[in-house]
Length: 379
Image 1 (cartoon, rainbow, N blue to C red):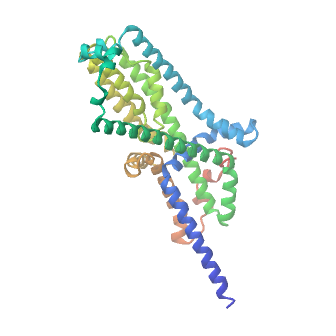
Image 2: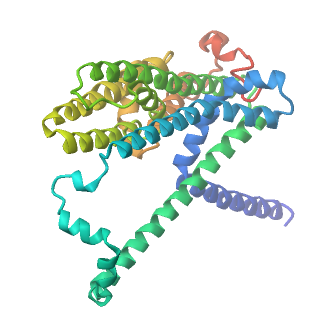
Image 3: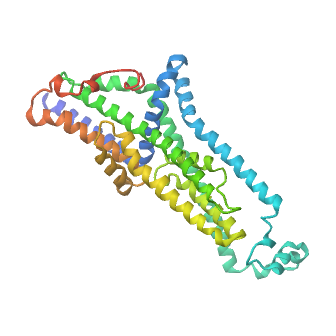
């Protein structure tokens, strides 16, 4: 009887552990993109945090300043872009380009009727209070509510990403030491694996930042060259700024710099259509250069080279290509992470499992065993 009770208790604890593990797995699976992007923010911010911690106390303040320092250039660029857009809008307002009477395909009589308050008061409201009209109104309200809900959910995901990065920065060192103490082995296999994975994660995610810088540089050059051949009255507004914004937007998974050049394309197409439709060839050229030279080539060619210093460039290129296709928008970060985990498992752990021999020091990359403030999480 005394031997059965410990077994029963152990079985109960294992059952509880499996339930808790399944619940945690479900949460991570439901928000895997949020967690993956939060890990990216952490690795992108960690070099800044390592320097901030030397001069700023406490660690919470250093982590908050590091996150703000990472986002500050993007925020300044966005504010500058908004000011440029406002100036352009005011310019067209002052020149009368936004006057609907000057637009083609606009009925001037209908426009005068809509602009006349007396004519609006004379309209019979019952003509428009039909079932179809009310259904259209309710549909518009539902779309507005869905948009607000979408923005709210996006704000929650952004908060979770920043919170995850913040606590990894502040408490990552403590968590790493606890993990190594609890699950480490006497031969150092687990420690070597964790350090190698951490080192390549840092290289890959910092490579994404470097890729954004290179993409922004390419965008500045290409858009400035395009403006040299632009027709009169149809130029890319603030071409260097558009290129820099494209580089920043390349950090956004899936949509990336389309957030920048699609609105600019719509602007150029609108201006060309309203002024001189024969200049729309420039809009086509802008789309082609943006998609091929600024968007696709850096993402497929430059990103693997700047990220994969210790990994095979071809494998990284495949991971970056098929990641979004397999997993969705977060695949561009998740696929390289899986690649790193698999490669180092095969390199460090698999020989031990197959041959049952301890890994000698010469079988492990000496660089993966070194420690410094940038490679030790939170140190």
